[in-house]
Amino acid sequence: MQRHTILVVDDEDFIRLNLKNIFGEDYDLLLCGGGEEALALVKSQKVDLALLDLNLGKMNGLDVLQAMRELQPELLVIIMTGFSSVESAVEALKRGAYDYIKKPFKADAIKLIVRLAIEKQELGEQVKALTQKDREGLEGIWGESEAIARVKHLVREFARFDDETVLVTGESGSGKELVARSLHGYSSRNTGPFVEINCASIPENLLESELFGYEKGAFTDARSPKEGLLEKADKGTLFLDEIGEMSPGLQAKLLRVLESKSFRRLGGTREIRLNLRIVAATNVDLKSAIQEKLFREDLFYRLNVLRIEIPPLREREDDVMVLARRFLELFSGKFNRQITGFAPEVQTILRAYQWPGNARELKNIIERICILQRHSTVRLEDLPGEITEGVPGGDVKLPEAVLGEKSLGEILDQTERQLIERALRQADHNTTRAARLLKIPRETLRYKLTKYGLDSGEN
Image (tube, rainbow, N blue to C red; front, side, top):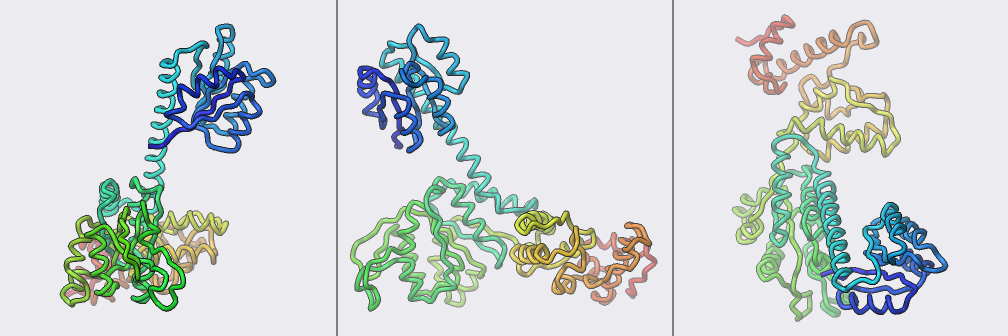
């Protein structure tokens, strides 16, 4: 349990000695007889609570109180005062003191006041920490769809069981690292390190030494011992990204680590106990990899106790513009751009695009748009070719009337008609397939065909 630091400020030796006897066993005490010395201590180190006498001789106790609070706004100050200076104690409360106690005081009375003050401080810190966890832990997981709401729910639930391994699955760019960081940030391990490694980017022999570390002489170039990532992640979280690319031999060693909660460095004989959570992630279908003898079945079941699956962005149409707006806000600020939003036809294109690179692809595109800013809103011509060519009608150009000859409604109707014509051609005039490409109900498409006087060409 954390020991709290109490600063005692009183010019009477007897009072300081008495308080040392009362609190010395349960708290770390700092004793001083004057205001200047007290302020020097508060300036140089963290203090949880101060017991401050108002009558200090050279410095006025109220001035010391105010200076302390300026140096450490969270500092709790309890005023010690004689019967003749109660009015000053009340003034101290107005200036931010937590409480006051009259001299002479009984040990039980001042111990109670201090204990209640410390408990209040701890409660406030816990509330602040939980609020911070909620803000930091989940702020990167953007979206309003039911699928993302479920991901956030699972993060909160699984974060509580912070000794259990979690498997995060999803396509490349879907946000697996964000989920791993959120699990760490939302757990009680958030004060420990978050250590990550991409298993696909490092050769097998180097990956093993990175994970386990080694002793001096373990191999030719091992001139001194080295901590592995398993040790560096002590009391925190180790994130194994792309675990599906790990070799079968190393998978067996990882399985042993998970089962025994211990390991040895390469070339070592000492068993090192683990105190960490492992979060693994993959974009590989591990069940198929098991059938192909590329992934160990026993390791899969050991990892798959708690699982979070991130759906691809193409299945979360409602989240596309949520993400796009957040990225636009982020990069507009970063590059000092004045881009206020997206033109309606751009929103249609972004929602219809299939996003093979998921949120990462969307993020990179918005970043590029902000760097190459052309307009105050994002227009069709700002989108890269792979986006406009990847959806039906995406390469449709806005009519010249956009310059002012027609109303916005007329322009949007003309653009919508072109999109529908393109979808029909791409779907070989099959209205069911065309509606699917446009992501609208078939009945809606039939209504729009009638509205624009279009013939589907369907037999």
